Image (cartoon, rainbow over all chains, first blue to last red; front, side, top):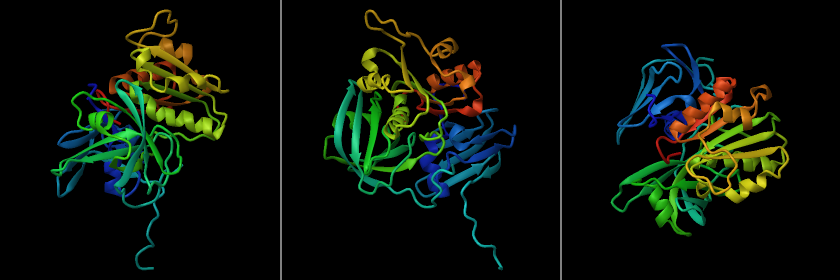
Amino acid sequence: MTSDTHLDGNALGGLFYELFGREMTHQQGCCDNCGTVSAFGSLIVCRGPGDVLRCPACGEVIIVVVSTPVRQQVNFVALRWLNIEGFEADAPIGD
Amino acid sequence: MAGTAVRGRLNWLLAEAVELVAETPRVRTIVFDVPAWEGHRPGQHVDIRLTAEDGYQAQRSYSIAAPEDGVRVVITVELVDGGEVSPYLIEELRVGDSIELRGPIGGYFVWEPGDGESVQLIGGGSGIAPLMAMVRARVAARSSEPMRLLYSARSLEDVIYGEELESLNAVDGIDVAYTLTRSQPPGWEGLSRRVDRAMLEAVACPPTAGPACYVCGPTGFVETAASALVEQGHPAARIRTERFGPTGGP
């Protein structure tokens, strides 16, 4: 992961916009391995048949995205939590 | 700031090339008119999609190189040998041709004028593009943030936006420094090595100024420059990075 070929989460901004329906690179997530909180844009990314996102602090694989012509599978391998700012919650059910 | 908080789809938009600028033998700036464009922030990028007659599609990301200006979207593309997209954009695309793009994308590697805080920009090669959008935004807004740019290029011939960068040193509060890493013109008295801590201590904002730091370029360059900033004493949380990979890219 320390080679010169990796990218960062900025490169997946378009993909994550598609998946979440909003800009995601500034949103923060917590690595389940080391507890470091990072913006999506700062995650270490290796692109290939699957896109692998790693924690910039410990290198643990946090998310893997596999895109096929008919579906995208997102594996939250080690994402403890994801914070989405600016989210407008729907009205509580049952009110 | 919450970034672009509007839920929705990121649609592919038709973009017509209206102006082409040869920056260097391997770098071209393309100005697109995108009728459906809704504006962007300095540092954001677009995804560009090319579709062949047989339906094959290739997609790449490019930083937007200028601040918001109506329906104009400006990108600066470096030729990647053997690439699928950059050879077309640099050698084939003509004024009047249309391509598809989507954006703006990005809420992390963005900067907007107005908060008064110092800014340190460090760019390698065509990594200057999103930083140039930030510099141009500051100039256009006539804001007062102290802003320093350290630009690393292989040679003087490889410097993008050269004349404009020269003129920026006359702008109050903006300071531009170059380092030419592979070859230097006769009589060059400027920096001539890769970015390191000693260089930052000589020309960059000191950590005591508390600058927001933005580093963009090829991956190896970004790793080196970001590490040097940390060694110099800048907190990691104040350093934002965008990596292109080995060559080209966003």
